[in-house]
Image (tube, rainbow over all chains, first blue to last red; front, side):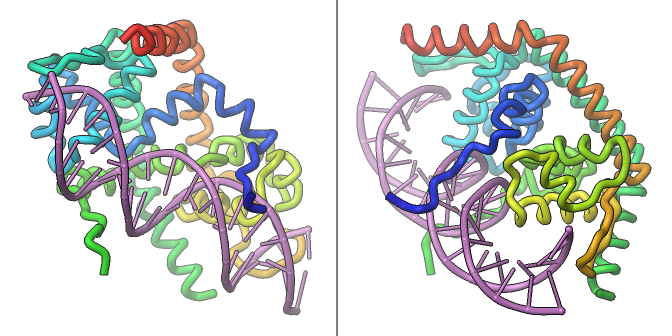
Length: 127
Length: 127
DNA sequence: CTGTATCCGCGAGGATACTG
DNA sequence: CAGTATCCTCGCGGATACAG
């Protein structure tokens, strides 16, 4: 038994189960946003998605889709090979709209964001 | 030399530098949201923050604060011990407002979110 | 074409000790 | 009180192989 057991922080245990944390959690996946937007214009086959998400591996696409299905943003087959389709649920369409708002906010503040990073690097360098 | 070198996916390289990805990245930190909200009512000392964020470790609080400073959401000292204060920048205040909107959306859809997970588990179990 | 099963690297989150 | 430096663990993203 290792001395280093991951302890569940008291403060975060409750937060992690909050709807906000769930949504932020799924959006933080490396390919989640791209995957959602790849389905925005309609349902897509697995290999269509793999072509659109340039560079994603087979397994990671499966994992990403399953995670999005689990949270209810995407519908699609859970078993059976062959041609199958994945698409946005109503909740998924709504989430893409929310992503749009976050993107708009982010791009509105792009100048401050890049400026802040420059200032930080400079201040650190000056030390 | 390992055969397993992490390759930078073509499709994501461009996305990762997008303002949206930067914002989602900082929001996805395990303690970022809690830290930001802990400073919402005013600047706080390091140890005040550590007490408010119940269960956070010393190092992780430092890392979290530095990341938020790097992105321009938090101001505070970069060196020198002693009593120091961390607080939200204007950009940080704005970000907390955005978080509020995301939280509102998430809680508006809480029923669908929990329902979706139940359905998913059930469908998987059924096979 | 798609799903499942391994195996692996690496970075984030965490514990702990030392410094002024 | 707060900053820096290690060391550790665990899970995500990824590569690859095989089955229907």
